[in-house]
Image 1 (cartoon, one colour):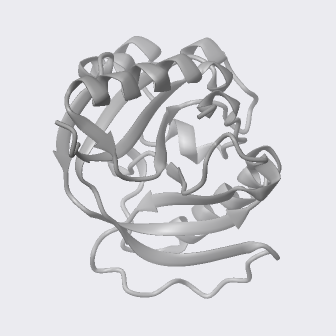
Image 2 (cartoon, rainbow, N blue to C red):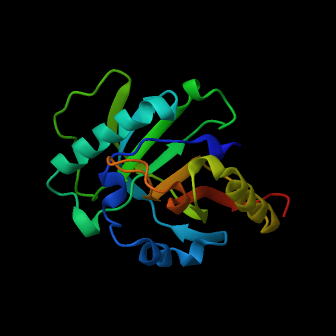
Image 3 (cartoon, rainbow, N blue to C red):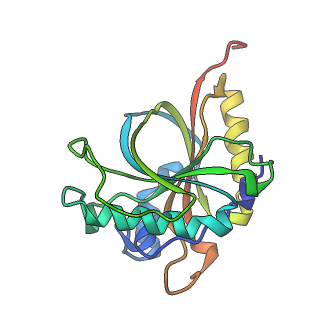
Length: 203
């Protein structure tokens, strides 16, 4: 699975909110994920924009609509209380990227039951969905998206050694990355890579 090839143009809010502090302080928040970790995560209601196509081409448009809708909702937390954006791909990342279907998302309060009125560009579809979690494995990737593959491999090796197996889609949470002002320093990008897991029948 070549997660290293996932390169997405993120809009500014995806990066500067809520983690607008300096690099050292930001990294310290996720120090515990430098090594793979299995934990339990609660299900989360999400505002999701579905988009088919190469993330390099469609990702910016998907995140644009996502943040447009999020910021037009009165109930969503803004600023320091806002969560970082996420994305899921329910496909093999070795497949042709133009055939990928991506789900670009932000957590929203349970009280939100309908979307604001909007006009989505062709190929984009917004919805409110509950993302299931349960047991998950996570690791923090520090650096460019095109160098994620070794991190993903470490994560999967850890899962197997712990007697688990992957039970969900490839998910990424974008803590720090490019902004509307430019790509910044890719060596300082922070991405949480996450999978749902379950006990292996072989264990």
